[in-house]
Image (cartoon, rainbow, N blue to C red):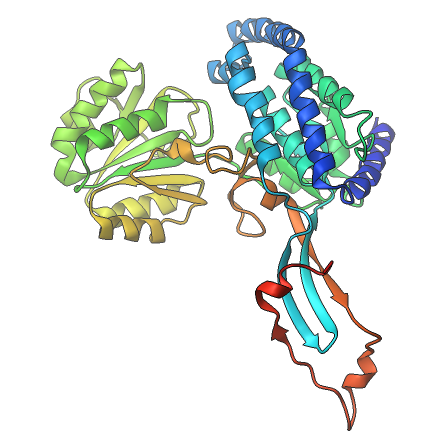
Length: 445
């Protein structure tokens, strides 16, 4: 198996080199072909997903998986049309990330330096049981000129296979799109195999729980980009509009409970707690959300379970929320920076000064003011889609779209210039002049 994976990675490496030389028109044509193929094969996709759901229901009954996983797994006609296929069109509509001149400097007369965006190369992605993630990841990689090796959750085996086969077939005979730009890995052992291929794979993106992410980080020399957990917070300040806070706190929890940007802990300022907390607990109860609270919350509301230290560190991905009353904004910030996974955190307040302090002081990839944490998403951010959300502090942070899948190289154009002319008694001097907007038109002229 290891030899097969290595051969596939070599094919992906060659495909990546070819893709990096394609035009945006060629890549967009491939994306349009994918969108049309997904629509034409909708019955095949939905039937495959039904097979996965039937198997998952049996696993749920045996306690082998959880209900949130099944929710992530489901693909119905509405999701296929309004999210998956629309997402492909959205990626195609994004500006071409390849070949953009980021900086232009005149080193000397006739000697110019350009920093130009290029694809990363071969991306390996291990993702959770969300078949829509396969389409998002693959189309983003295609648009950004990267080859991709994908390993999805076994629970989505049939759906992932159908989607991958449809996408590969849709691009098989298109101009410029090489064979091997996309590979689907299906066996668990294949993950271990790709982690060894640091000479062929340029970046690993894990999308899953903390255990998976830590395992990958500890078992590969390949750079890893992603996040381990989505422990997200909403802080309701003393100056919050109460009705606005209720809507945000509810949406952040229940709009889609099993995703990494759903809120797990609600923090409430002490000055408004006696009014807000009982009302919010009732709202959560009506929505079938289990509430766990600290001692102060237990005193204010009935039917609340006591929260433990573990709750503040837990990503539930379920209809559960922990609630804590804090004395002030500073305590909220301290709590978030201590317990947060640095993913997404929000403040609800009408006090602009408090909001500004929160947005600056909270050390997370996305911070929001008077908005649900559910907005932390590549599609909602206008990135087309996302390969994942990164809490890294290098290269990319937050929802990773096309810009996160390119790096840059330096291009120098001269007119017979040699380094020796800049050394010695009559040495030439560098001008190091910013070429400005004219220079940003690029090294191609």
